[in-house]
Image 1 (tube, one colour):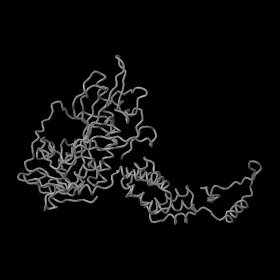
Image 2 (image 1 turned 30 degrees about the vertical axis):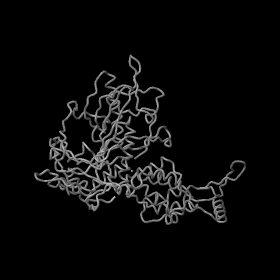
Image 3 (image 1 turned 60 degrees about the vertical axis):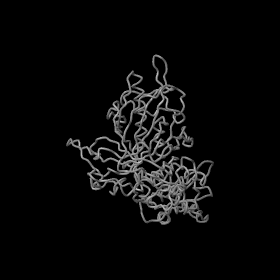
Image 4 (image 1 turned 120 degrees about the vertical axis):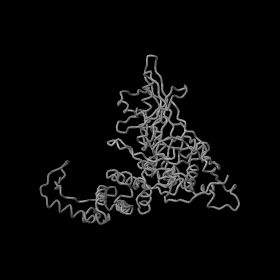
Length: 542
């Protein structure tokens, strides 16, 4: 069978540190009348599976939680996986729908080369084995926003398998106490997205938008190697940073470009795993952690009270902070997987197996994609620590905010200030202002050049630290002004001339004859509150 025709489609091009201590983080449990009581002296959940203990008449029983994730990442591509329709967020409903997306008879899929390359690059970055031959399948289920009645996916032989993802969590109260954990990746597969159902409750109707139907997805299946919400959230944050660094997905959870399904069960250590529930469509790392921790507590409460856990799909209500049942999975749905008859096997090559005289537009070279891999977030963090003597938690913070690392690096290039001071200003002052105003780095009114100039003034002791903060506030409010102009206008300079300083002192004393006596018989001068002299007395003065 011939290799599939590949079509060009390109597009132009971070969350990671979570603190966990030994205390319970499941206060939401009170919403339905139960809480969890852990054993005294229990180790951090970052060091072992989450184990919860409750007293019963037969003694104490420990519970271990098991968490696995299925993550759907929208591929950064100008067009959909099997059609030429554009991909654009918030476009008018049903304005980006081709005949194939609407499943009109006689239409055939044409595989998007960009999506295949994105899958290969993601698999390589996640230490996966890339299958040189992968297959497409039809997954049948009937829903209004799936016009064909099936989804094209890769069930039998996915494009990448057997990878791993390293992520970091805090294991104590101090942010510097970081532990690295690893979760196994079962597989990465290409599949098409479904449309979107818009529920109009006042009118008791559901509207269908097919703009999203057929958009290319990467489904990343993580093995159940995690034990609590914080671990799962940290793993997702790290994956989000990797996808953004690769440019294979924008991974914007607010826009639905990264969605997570969590599979959760609890059991007694040493016993078989319990019945699992699935919490669907979580689009926030924070809500993911809350949903998992709540579900762990709910299952323990049910079992401790003699009830059974149902194999069901649940959703998370972020307003109530609890999971709600959606549908029963006891009667397992038959998806009737079958080979996709309109797509031949996807064949990839490496340099050794590349056919002689092959058209570069019609083949994908795994080794060539490996050479294009950019620096990954873990490597960037290590470089920041080594180059600038930065604390690990600071390196995480710089990467977690989109554009913040580039801002920091641009400031470093233009200032003589020590990297430690630059880090402090960027993470404490600059990022604090961004959060207060709910702005992104790109929307900041303060440019890297302006902050660098301000830090240069502070570094050569032309202004004090308190004056520097005043200047920054003015920079934030007044676009177009430079730090030097603001310092000059507001007369915030430190005085360097000893003779001028003495003249100021004499002027103040002569203008205020009401002199009292201070301690040890020394004169005490009462200076009015409206005086703003900036006096520098020595090399360590502010």
